[in-house]
Length: 302
Image (tube, helix red, strand yellow):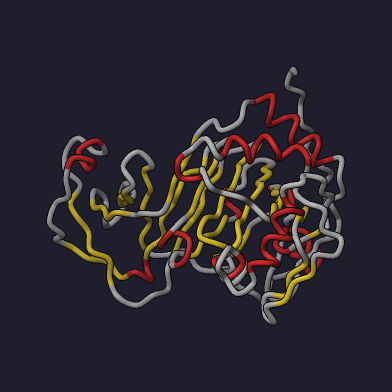
């Protein structure tokens, strides 16, 4: 199937922002100097290198050339072809997009969940969309995802004309399991990761020949930086699949800053069940029901 051009969506005149969250649309409507403040940038920026698994101080920064291991991030480039990407986005655009926070639009394929009360409803949930069947099958070809069975898919639409972004956050761990899997479509971006925990990160001086030299061995730490002042930038290429596990999933918040949305971007995030809903867990029967619905691939956006 030949790739077809994917037209940018019409810029909306309404937004779905609530509370302190804003986008370009509501900011223009309010006019004047906004009384709200965007989250300040972290003091020290590090760049994640997927071929080594290390985060390295940005060029011309106070920590240029210094590095620390950053586990829990797996990046699979060119996970889908250009033709597959175009077809997937066309199929998404045939379904309605709902307004969401911070200039985003969304499509949810999953149960209705009240995370605060830890309750969910399966009514109306008919599974993941049919076009995701091959995507999920392909995930299983990679060792890190060979037993991955998603029970929810959330499509998010980002557009620079709306000032789309998503604030730093941790995904729920009551219902959603160990791995967060995101397919990045239409344009590249940067996932910004930060951690509010006290304490410091120990740094190593990156040896000459970086990044290859970091794979061979670890040098003794000789410098530190306050964890709360660090932001790790994870470059996410177009058509790549990103997997977050371990500390990157549970300890480091992730965000997409407005400045890193330079063209339309569509992200499909897949989530698996937590141990509570898996065999042996307290709600294993409900978990089995959710999986049967999810993997029927008969879904429409909720």
